[in-house]
Image (cartoon, rainbow, N blue to C red; front, side, top):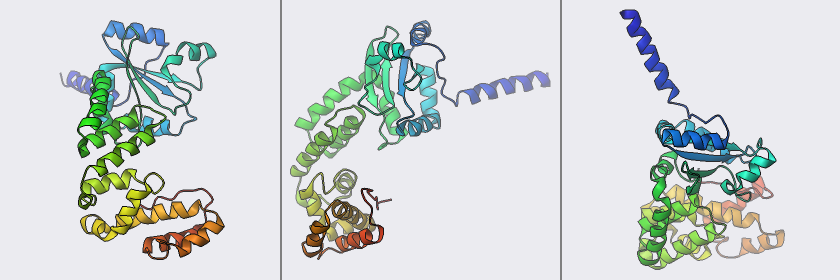
Length: 293
């Protein structure tokens, strides 16, 4: 009796352990479609390539996230399309499930009749838990996106701005940066300047506004640095300014750098002086340094 209970315990243990790993389908895509129909599941189609470093991060993130693994294993036939190993005929037949101008992985939700439900990108700017919450509602992604775009026109709250940015980064567009910056600009134009430095608005600035993308808003932070530091982490505010000044200074010619040393704000803002000092110590060619970490 004890022996039988021990065997049962081992079976349960090994069964639980196997659920901790993503179960990739072994076979062709046509076979995956047949299996999906038999098991009444949809397909989670992953386009991968080792030429893109993001894929390794993606692979590690989802396989180390228990809730994601459980969700994908239970809900889908997980099919991985390896662009590096695929034959020319396979690439041609599955061309609608990848875009050669985008990075990898590219993610597609497909039903057993090979109808595309939705397709998204994997963003390194958000946690796996945040992205999983979208995946759980994969059948509604397209409808949610339509509503989010509508809200950005009619109800531009901070919450809607953040939702727009999130979806814009997981739903590919070659103009995503431009579109995000336009929405952010409209949002700040719709609120009082005294609210710019509030923590939630500062978070938006810190994560998405650079000197190059919105010089006017960056200049506002510069001129109101003390107010931003009073309401937020003063070191992060200072680091944000240093990073932007450093990047601006790095890509100037030697003649332009000489002018910057004499012009506002480089001769008045401490962070600008520190950026110059950092440049003189490091002197990179094109490397951007992130001082916020």
